[in-house]
Length: 477
Image (cartoon, rainbow, N blue to C red):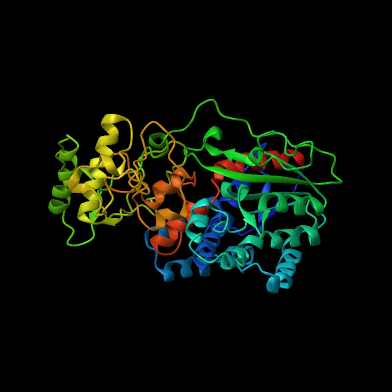
């Protein structure tokens, strides 16, 4: 038995728990070196996901098999019965995963929770990332149509101050802060937000480091913004996800972190999705296999492909409980089914577009621009043939042999940017497939309506990247 106690983790703005999953799964010498003491998230659906995962972790390996019943039969009473049968583990999970909006008016409650959950005699870690909508490049483009004063008054710009509040009050030895790359160019009241955030973090008594080993500050004292960008595809994540990470070490600790180690090979989307059962897409109205086949084959024929399928070639769009066949590194052979794997419903015209686009990509090695679609499938826009068409890649195939493009919360709105590379299926990615690209294990179930599940996956930190960060933190402490 290890003589070391696990290092506690407080995860704020936790989302569905990608950072926490990475830290809690890190092992050294056969023992888990981190435990989640507290996860705080304001969204009710994401908090349910956190709660379920916390419950899963606290159950013994034998008892964990019982939770798979809920994965298949997702009725509230099924989970309630599991909680009744395992009251100690359920209570502990409820105390760990807390729904709370972090804000000045809730700081007293936040302080109480941390005091209750964290053993101040032992080192612990603060992780998390303030909500990023105000910093994202797309979000700012949309906001440019609003009055400037509304943009400047958006409190999402200053939510990082809740992070500062915890650092100031509790002084954890190490923290990890994550955000979108757009934060590097965002301004607030004429000031660069990232420079301000870094200065404020340093003023709390912390030295700031890049995870890539690059210098974090120049000779003039300005923060080197690009050095904080982690390109996930370089570190074994099957996705070109570029995010900002700041590692902070308390000034009195005379240690320096190592940097993340790039992998020799990139992981492609087909490797990540290996073993996931095929699903056909489905029509949003009057869905039948015959009508779907007709729509798909119309798209394929426009790309110069022909294909005949029997319904036996698919598990069927409605069968969410199909068992994973095998997996690259994420499967769980004990599960009787695969949660969150259900095909979306699409318009007939979109199924035709998806089939055409994925077949075109398979033949040419690139996803077609909207202007390259046949006239029959072009969206009904007046200027579609103009060079000034916005978002000409609004229909984007995720290409075989490469990491996917960034999985974002926009996947919850439509699947146009996330077309499955297999033209036989003629559909967008499922929640489970997006979760695989984010490196969540197959036994990590996302709660809430499917739209909310997509949002959670898109906003998360990839757990396998977080696990590599956890190793750096562990070695420091």
